[in-house]
Structure formats: structure tokens, C-alpha cells
Length: 207
Image 1 (tube, rainbow, N blue to C red):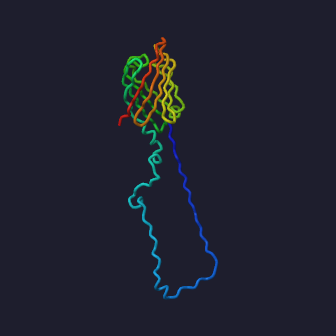
Image 2 (image 1 turned 90 degrees about the vertical axis):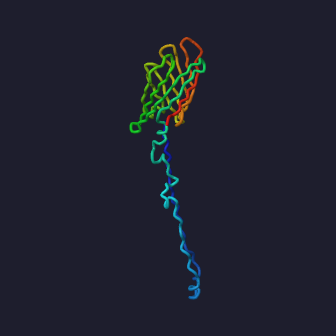
């Protein structure tokens, strides 16, 4: 995950003016001075921000809170998965918690049904630094073996494992996460050479 901070630079332009030489102008007669109206003083209308206290258009929430973008992805995503090859399905949830002081992300996933050869497996929790999540986190699960988890700068997710205990040889899932949902596809390869299982998943973030 990333946080891109755009900085703005302000420039001041100074203009100078100079007087030119020449003949001295004839001063006006007293009558002309008395009858010529003086120039009206210039007035400047106050800006909306000065009269109403409204914030300037250049300000943005991201400038006041550097973690505003990442905060959109915190929370619980819930939905389901479907094995389109063999017709099985189940529920799935993902709880994402970010510690901005420690710069870590903790993810707890829970899926029902037969998942990677396991019947209704217990929830799995993993914690990693935000930098590791961007570059790839190597996790070790008692249920699913070694797992590689990655979130790219464009919020694309990859989860894969190539040494799953039991009847499953390997699995791979690809998806995209937004502040509203997580969606993607997965492929599971079996030890006995059975046709690969392919499917989809969709989770929606709660309010």
C-alpha cells in the first residue's frame, strides 16, 4: 500500500515600473483643479473565505491527514466465494486493521465451506509492515503452508501458496481492493491431477 504525498510550490512574481524623461508638463490652472473630480478610490471585494470563513480550494483532507487514503481501506469486508468448476461455495470475511504509529497492517481472514482441502477452517491472522505488504510478505500457515501475500501500488492483490498440506498442491488468487469491495479470481491445483478448480470471490466493505 502506498501513500503518495503531492507537494505544491508557490512562486511570487515581482513587477517594477520606472518613469521616463521628457519635458516638464504645464501645471493645471486653479479652475481646472477645482472642477476636475478626484479619482475614486479603488475598492477590493473580500474573498469568500474572508467573509464566510470557508476553507481555501487548495486545501485537501490528504494534506491535513497524511493517512487519509489508507484509512479508507480499514474495516471488515464480507461476502462469498464460488468454485465455478465444481459448484461449491461459502462465505468469506476479511478484517483489515492498520496501525499508523507502528506502520503495520494486520489482516484476519475467515472462510466457510471446504477451503483448500480443509472443512470450515478456523480464521487466520497475519501482521506485516506496510512496506513488506507492498514488496511481498512471506507467511507460514499451519493449515496452508508457506504463503506469499502482496498488495501493489495500484491496490492489486496476489496470494499464492505452492506447498499446501493435504490434497491440494498449490493455489493462486488475484484481485483488486478498493474502499468499497474486494473482488478477484482463484485457481487451485490438486495433488492427484484432477482438473484445476477455478472460481471467484467478492467481498463488500461494511459501513
